[in-house]
Image 1 (cartoon, rainbow, N blue to C red):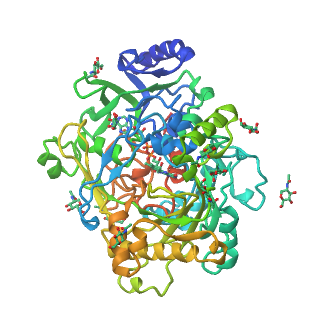
Image 2 (cartoon, helix red, strand yellow):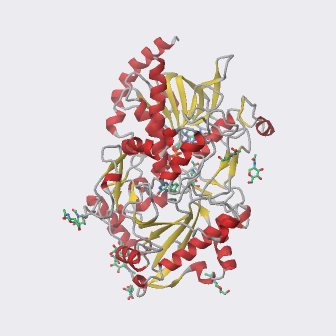
Image 3 (cartoon, rainbow, N blue to C red):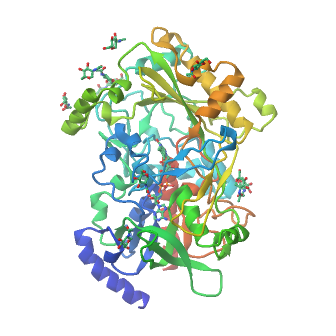
Length: 595
Ligand SMILES: Cc1cc2nc3c(=O)[nH]c(=O)nc-3n(C[C@H](O)[C@H](O)[C@H](O)COP(=O)(O)OP(=O)(O)OC[C@H]3O[C@@H](n4cnc5c(N)ncnc54)[C@H](O)[C@@H]3O)c2cc1C
Ligand SMILES: *[C@@H]1O[C@H](CO)[C@@H](O)[C@H](O)[C@H]1NC(C)=O
Ligand SMILES: *[C@@H]1O[C@H](CO)[C@@H](O)[C@H](O)[C@H]1NC(C)=O
Ligand SMILES: *[C@@H]1O[C@H](CO)[C@@H](O)[C@H](O)[C@H]1NC(C)=O
Ligand SMILES: *[C@@H]1O[C@H](CO)[C@@H](O)[C@H](O)[C@H]1NC(C)=O
Ligand SMILES: *[C@@H]1O[C@H](CO)[C@@H](O)[C@H](O)[C@H]1NC(C)=O
Ligand SMILES: *[C@@H]1O[C@H](CO)[C@@H](O)[C@H](O)[C@H]1NC(C)=O
Ligand SMILES: *[C@@H]1O[C@H](CO)[C@@H](O)[C@H](O)[C@H]1NC(C)=O
Ligand SMILES: *[C@@H]1O[C@H](CO)[C@@H](O)[C@H](O)[C@H]1NC(C)=O
Ligand SMILES: *[C@@H]1O[C@H](CO)[C@@H](O)[C@H](O)[C@H]1NC(C)=O
Ligand SMILES: *[C@@H]1O[C@H](CO)[C@@H](O)[C@H](O)[C@H]1NC(C)=O
């Protein structure tokens, strides 16, 4: 079928399907085999691309998502329940390879496996990172468009600041001028107050030199203690599925979403010239039939930091020798696919407290939990509208820290934290009792790992080695972060509240004991990036150009967390949204220009 005929055919069909709902649960019902754009992965970034490209009425867009719908998934809707999504059908259930620096431990590596991707299972923290994070992206890609200042319009296209569920007076808890009120994805301050809030704020007075109050950590300058901002809309999670694929957008006849379908490979189309990859192969399961669709314009890979490199490698795009070794026929030699994986280590610590007003009372008391669920169902209020975390503390190591005699400062600028503390009104160790929890995160890791294929079967899990704590810098910084958390809780504000250390921290006082506590307790921060990293055009390394086109090939772009060459100093979803908003504009510009 000629392209014009194909799109006419699609228009007719999509009008019929579109008026019903452009969601297909299986490959049999798919309307046609050609689309202008095929988006691989209906996750955080993919749904932004799908939404923005279908603003162009004549562009047909197909999203292919491996997981099921997000609709009606209670654990994805009710913020407090989000941990319940892990190790279910809504999780890819990845694990790491044995981690050398963690006494050989194998760690769970959660990733969302439903529409919305990881934005449908994450903890909803909204943190943009520092201005220097983005300025470094601009610098290493030699594209000023990635700088903090130049990305401001995209931050605002994404963000829709909203009132918290409890409609409390938020004056002084954020800086309105730093936010977007007309975007798509909801962001709000906490809709339920934790009893620890006043003591946390008092600590910024008691110990203001080390822990200054920061009215808005999303201003570009995240250092200090700030109120948590979350992608929560009233009492519900706001994911890329609930926002960018909201019913008003799903009504578009040119937007098609295919669920429960795994993309296995991208196939080369045409002959001669730079290779083009515009045909997408997929199947519903390992033994089911493989089908194909072709993008007349572009395939956008948005499978995430693990999905995207796995698809590229399975398609033969990667290090040719390494691919041959696992039985994949190389199609394009691009050695850095899957390399340079970077993530932040995280560690949960708990202290016993002299109170029952903690979220431990919910997790340990089924009667209370049932009553709170009833309240949420009645009017979407109460303790279940939040996660239990209430504040973020961002800190730098001192400039004269001995570690800087061995390692250059890995942070991109003086406004960027080396570590983060997340304060939770409850325990982080699964122990019985009442606690305050502090999760410490190394925000600026040095070590790099990789993702490789274990076999040529796209349904097999890839081998994921984040190289966690691979550099002594990370161990040092995590140890200092735990000490910092201990100092935070030594403020007078906590004198009649914190009773003592809990769990493994009880036995960890010397540096050696703390190091062992870190090694046995660290988990993945779940912020992996870098496996399809951007680099400057013509650079001798990297996977995509600054416009996110895969280097050396045609028809293929990557838009997701994998393109970030460095992990930003916070949680990664807001940066993914920002990158996706700009990417959508770049895609539009490149095709409008060719019309
Ligand atoms: C438990 C957890 C908590 C987190 N908490 C926070 C937080 O509080 N704040 C924050 O900012 N960040 C958080 N993050 C990280 C953040 O959510 C992610 O960085 C971000 O959502 C990643 O977006 P993405 O578009 O790169 O990938 P994803 O959102 O994961 O999208 C990838 C999509 O592609 C699909 N896919 C993959 N492979 C295929 C294939 N072969 N065929 C078809 N479909 C495929 C996947 O199913 C998925 O839907 C958290 C992550 C986890 C796991
Ligand atoms: C993840 O593991 C759970 C529990 O074993 C399982 O039910 C689920 O199907 C798995 N997820 C996927 C995507 O296979
Ligand atoms: C909210 O609090 C601020 C400062 O405390 C106060 O000036 C303002 O009037 C309050 N707003 C409302 C609507 O109560
Ligand atoms: C695999 O998918 C096909 C549809 O493509 C379906 O008919 C078949 O039942 C599935 N097999 C399994 C084991 O789920
Ligand atoms: C990893 O990233 C660094 C810094 O951006 C770069 O210099 C290096 O070449 C990259 N290595 C690979 C294998 O991509
Ligand atoms: C917490 O609850 C227990 C059991 O109801 C009670 O004995 C204890 O006094 C309470 N503690 C505080 C600090 O309120
Ligand atoms: C349980 O903890 C929540 C969250 O701190 C608090 O709002 C609630 O009052 C507590 N309930 C009881 C019965 O202690
Ligand atoms: C559990 O919660 C219920 C309802 O709030 C409360 O009446 C009861 O005392 C709680 N039980 C314990 C052991 O705290
Ligand atoms: C919500 O419901 C709870 C319990 O059902 C009730 O106590 C509360 O007042 C209601 N809140 C609002 C804002 O309606
Ligand atoms: C992946 O990383 C591991 C450990 O960091 C290293 O041993 C291995 O050689 C790397 N593999 C590739 C293909 O780069
Ligand atoms: C702390 O050390 C003591 C003595 O070695 C041991 O009995 C206890 O189990 C340890 N506690 C924890 C939480 O590891």
